Length: 399
Length: 224
Ligand SMILES: Nc1ncnc2c1ncn2[C@@H]1O[C@H](COP(=O)(O)OP(=O)(O)OP(=O)(O)O)[C@@H](O)[C@H]1O
Ligand SMILES: [Mg+2]
Image 1 (cartoon, each protein chain N blue to C red):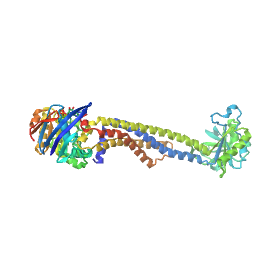
Image 2: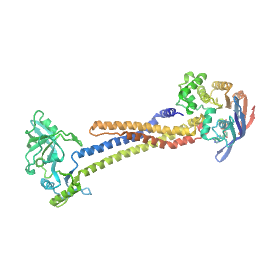
Image 3: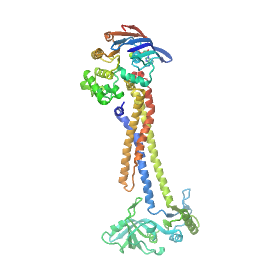
Image 4: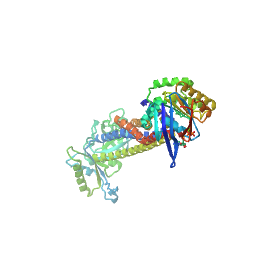
């Protein structure tokens, strides 16, 4: 029996029970779609996140107030916790390994210039921020290295803010209002785009002490330390810890290295991967049970047909092959549908989040299709053997 | 051409042995027209199935065209059925999702004959069996007589050595039954060896040779 005839015969029987076949294929399709989505996104997402983070440089260490214990509570409830201050920041500046130390306060604020008003994200930072985060000033210059406690009221604008507040003329040297504080524009950052979903161009930077004043805060939200190449992160962490414990009398702060941040994100990603993978696995399992069921029913319903095929010259081997192939084709069709859905979803996600690279390697596509067909073969083996084992005389009498 | 000697076939039903064929010996020559009659349960279908290699006897020997086919492996049995045996059943046994032409071509398809050749050979039969305008119809769109004609075409498309019909008119009204018998007798006149199992004495009497089976034995044989 020719392969084309076999396929035609199989397709005719799959078409004869459209709804059943569709539902059975659906299980496999969902599973394969999940697998494809997972592999297309997984690779892209991992690359995306690593790229987003390392564009700030990988020698960054963040210090945040409060200590998260393994119990998940902060020491702060005891009331003995001290704030991270600009003085702490100054103390860290004496670290020999430190190339830049940047205080950080962040919040939303209303800015005004030439009668225009906007709400934007404001960062209160130090003069070394541009260096620490590898950001470029487009025109003018970044905040000057003033005494952090007496910094002058300068402001550096993000690219987008500059365009929107001063659409017609050069913002450099212009006066504007930040919250209740007047400030003078010293520089405009280069266009940066989005990083991890934040629009880096829709921000302004002012000295940290001014921001503390603006938001009426006592302590910083974070201190970022950029250490020089050639030093170990652990060594720098230990040095930071020594200085701050010395100043605070206890470890009431949390130090996070770039690597740790990547690790946390990595573990979130792997959890996501496991979840989607589990969904795919369960669907494939359901799909294989579906194939098994539909093929078992087919053998029962088509017993007389099997007898007839034997009577007109089909061997047991041929019957086995026909039914095995039917399960395989069914699973293969489901797999193809799953590939299409997975592809479309991946492209849709790419269209919605253009920055997220979606990449489906061909090897995975082929693997997924082979996987679905393998499931069809395995799930179809028992029913196909039942069909092959039927006694033709009995089978013919079953009608 | 067909030589059965000392054929026994027993079935075990609920621990009890039922002897459906009891030392049956029968020789059928090429071109013969033979009817098998007998009471219900006497073993007529069993005999036919053994001749058609669908069933294997427990003992005895079966020579088909001089070759011992008593203990062939499944693969060879299937090949022999394909080349030498044509079956016709009371309930037609057409595949409902295939067209008349596709049903007729089924034995050729299983044997791996290319489509063009299949089409040519089925077209000849479709025309000579008066099914010309029904070739693309499916079985449920055909009358009983037409269905049986499709089944006969399927049985003879591979030019079998023997055509075995188990109550071919059992499911038809008188007139279409008569047409089917006419068709089969026409094939026999053209040289086709024909064995018909029937309950209908009128049909049975028409055969040149009449065999009577009772309790798994040959009770009478009008010739051979
Ligand atoms: N597969 C089977 N299992 C058990 N017993 C069987 C089987 N096939 C046939 N028999 C028994 O063998 C005997 C002969 O059966 P067979 O079908 O050959 O009779 P028949 O002459 O064709 O009857 P009918 O005219 O009713 O078709 C019967 O007693 C039947 O019960
Ligand atoms: Mg019978």
